[in-house]
Length: 345
Image 1 (cartoon, one colour):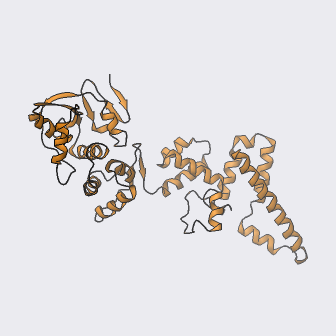
Image 2 (image 1 turned 135 degrees about the horizontal axis):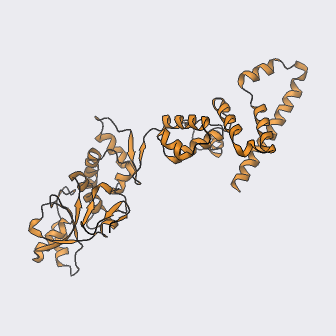
Image 3 (image 1 turned 45 degrees about the horizontal axis):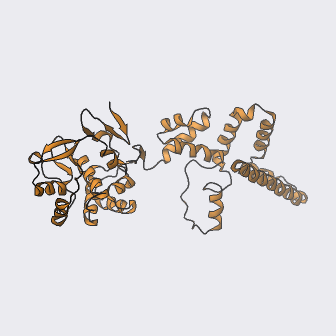
């Protein structure tokens, strides 16, 4: 009976590692080792498409041949019988005088086979040199441009930042894909701005729709949909603004305490925010909730309304009105702080 483990299919009848289920995450090689094995003639094997620019190391081959330990099975492409991982072990077996060797089969294309070879040589045995890993990364970016920098980094042993730099050089004359496939196998867009805006419209118009449905309809992840909903609830724009403030800037620190944007409500979102609150059953169907909605609605003053009210305040009342306005603002600020503190406790 087949079993799925870590993105691979363990098929004990077919004795194969299926490429269609590869995620090439760090767990991949440990899963390969759980697949069943077969014994084949060494003469039936073809030379590897090795990521090692200088080929196999003779000294390492001699060390393996002289070792009293049983060598681990190699990985072979079933279609071509080309060695994917274990070229040093094959040569060591020949040096020992063996005619057969234990293998695990891989069913897949040449590009996936090379990617698996890189990962295998990065995680065990004789390590790849930095030049090997850099060259392999450039090749993988040509055959698997949809994979994220982190996935490729986990495969080649380079940092995501280095992979990103190689990607920029390797694809300088080719259009970049608008999506990346992460370690979990999910495809994510590079720019979620449009998806966030679609999600904001859906949440505002249909607050009863689940986050999973919003994510599916907007073409974003469920986590991004949740972030959009939370931002709207705080009165922020659905798409975070790019800010050039330094981390030490007091204003930037204040922004981060309130979820990344300034705490002040964004005028464009006030109407949708109030609509969401008014349609929320947990507020609509109790007196305290309705009172809160009325107060929030009354105190939501647009810039035009502010100007109209200011222009109509008599000069002799300005100080008193301003003092009361500051007091109201202070009360609401204290209310917001206590509300946030209550949520965290």
